[in-house]
Length: 231
Ligand SMILES: [Zn+2]
Image 1 (cartoon, helix red, strand yellow):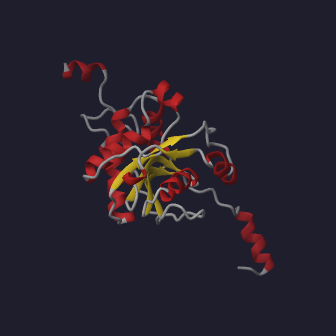
Image 2 (cartoon, protein in one colour):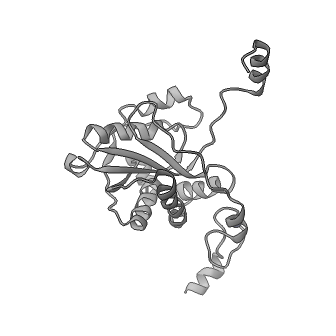
């Protein structure tokens, strides 16, 4: 059965799509894909304590996360969670008591059948040996976040989450919120605000990948600054 499956669906690298001998990631991608070594981010809104991501959301990583999210590649969650676990140990370096995840709305869950953030959280929790606890739910639909400015993103997720567990489950705890992609941090911040209000001691965000920040300063601003004598 396994051989038939391998014949019909030969294993492919989740990052580049080349055939592999069964691994999710081929040797070439293992050698070439870069870990995200940017320092953890702090929350401008002051709710999460730090947030980090394991990879950059581009190229093959983007392909893999799309597969996980939209094309039923649930099996990609495990290798991505392995990178997240490494990131937790080496970049966040924090002890945590429980792992939770950014919830999705009911319609998406019904259409897709799963929440990719929950899959990542469950794999990560198994690797870390801590419980995975659903703590949050959505209060309303939110718009897709692409193409929204940072201010619009914050507005889009404001009050979009509420506690879905007993406050005792998070009170005094160090909670890690898992998600697939870190962009502005607005979603993690909105989730962290609910958890902090319920008494969580510390809240961290951990994502599989982060979008590179678009620079707010185009190259020409360097020339303007030079002219102004600011550089
Ligand atoms: Zn590859």
